Length: 285
Length: 252
Ligand SMILES: Nc1ncnc2c1ncn2[C@@H]1O[C@H](COP(=O)(O)OP(=O)(O)O)[C@@H](O)[C@H]1O
Ligand SMILES: [Mg+2]
Image (cartoon, rainbow over all chains, first blue to last red; front, side):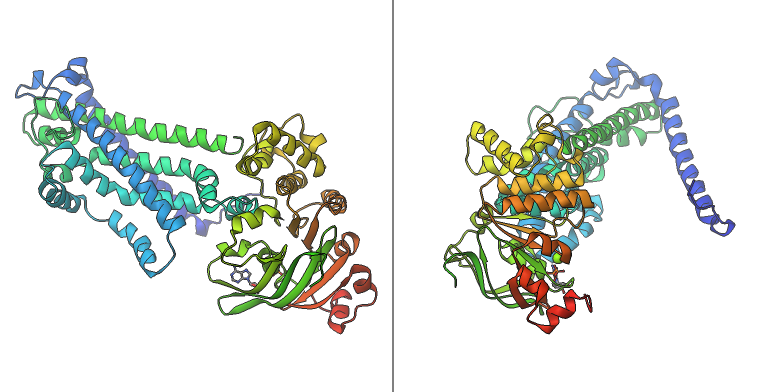
């Protein structure tokens, strides 16, 4: 009841905002409807357990899906500890000098580097110099580099959001700096960090260019069995199918897009749940 | 230096970058005494108080010189672990800042880290909560979140938390400034009781409060101590003209 009445002069801004929101939403809806109408028919158990094939009716995403899950797991294993510890170090442990300020200031720039550049770096460093070959681990290392800046930035943000009075409270009762960090600050920062990590990982799921650059297979009729095996991924499979002229392959691509979108949405949903659970626990535990 | 004084400063100065916030302060504080630090805002009361248990260590660009002597040792000596200092010189902050944990855990956390067994921890938590006049209000809901308490209760919880380690000195920085008059009265009563066990140093911007609760009053102005006297003395017959002007409200 205390809301200010909108003056007509201030109308253009909300109207423009609403209009852009509606446009964006319509595009998204159109995209989803298009994909579902084209691909939903292809969803079947055999689509999940068939390898890629020259014959559209027999083709599936078995090796691509497994490759993507492998990549996701390995990337998480590498990027989560490295990212979170980098953030802890930069924000809480390292002295604030010109050098660390330079690094902090440039992490955002790293997040803006095109993914193909990471692909080339991965090709040079992991595939060639370190001799990993075009393997899962080379792909996962490349994707990790790609999403590390995002994880580090999200983690630094959530560390900064921890109120200073909480740290003072802990120091005030004689907590050591490490106790303050690991037993008070971190537990407050973790929900935000997890959200950042999951969003970054779900982004890595769709990355295609860097994987092609490190030499992922475009066609694989076998499953990777260890992290030194060659692989393909859902994103590459989709790219491959979508670039063929036949309608049947277009439909396969749409079906695979439904799968990859579902995984992404599920991950984001889990991020939301975790955040909600952890932040409601914050106040009581 | 008086033999009885438990904590004292000698030529203590603190600067933030180029700005000197506390300048050449030499004071002594005794056990079982409440000292009030008064003075206009920005005169360095908080800075001085935080220098007494090295809470300024965490601010960037702070320089401290001179000495803070606690039990005959300079706590700024390089051999001294500031973590151990803070366990013996507790602190209560301007705004209540309980941990985002249960009422019980707020007090128990530091005690447990100090190495006590869980049954001793429980005992100490109870003693501290009783000491902070909070036990009756919370004994049936020790497991619920500290954030469910009122502001005044939270501040008493913070006092209990500071007491639980058995410190000798408790520093309080405007502990009532965020509280209503009733909660303030409770904290003032509590301070009067705690005086039996601790050396208490309270920053306050409220001169009536200083008069009510303290044995001794220190008047700060621009980072320097203008006058430090028995409270009754300072409020009735201040020695310095500046003190008189401040107390009669000519500035501040
Ligand atoms: N963290 C800080 N960095 C820089 N200057 C500060 C900081 N804290 C306090 N000061 C300055 O030091 C002076 C004393 O501040 P403070 O001790 O908080 O005074 P009081 O508690 O008496 O109001 C003020 O001029 C204030 O602006
Ligand atoms: Mg202050």
